[in-house]
Length: 199
Image (cartoon, rainbow, N blue to C red):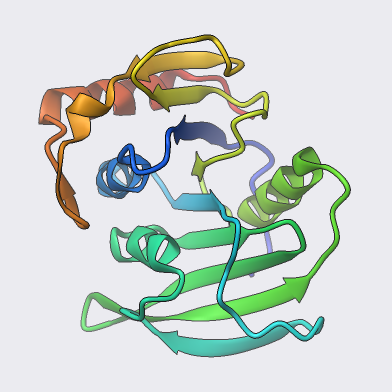
């Protein structure tokens, strides 16, 4: 981790139905946000496939494995750091560059026990501040108070602090690395992120 830390960052959460295109949208936002600063991502997952013995450890992992697919996609899209978090464990992946391409990441696992979802998110955000990122894109944590972009068929009001609603039809999946979202809509989302108050 770096010595200094960012006291404030701009944070947006992408939430919605399963397989609605959340990771695809995030993967397309990352390189666009990198024009303005360092980008971190937080992924709330049911399960992460990592060594899990309760000790903090660091190791190198080769990108492209089937495990932790969404977090690896975020790193491959250019994120400086990605935190995956479950009910009792946090994984932090940082990109390492070789010949200008991400080839592997450092994986740090730490067994944790959080009483509340808000505690998990706050701990992840603390990691991001220590990593000196300027922007954090969160996938999940739909009950949090952070600003949200909802990808859903209807805007039923089940989410708090919604700043944009997008129907899943914007993201007709072509394959796992691409979606049909148009450039103008992506730039609208970037403008929105740049305008939200620091967290």
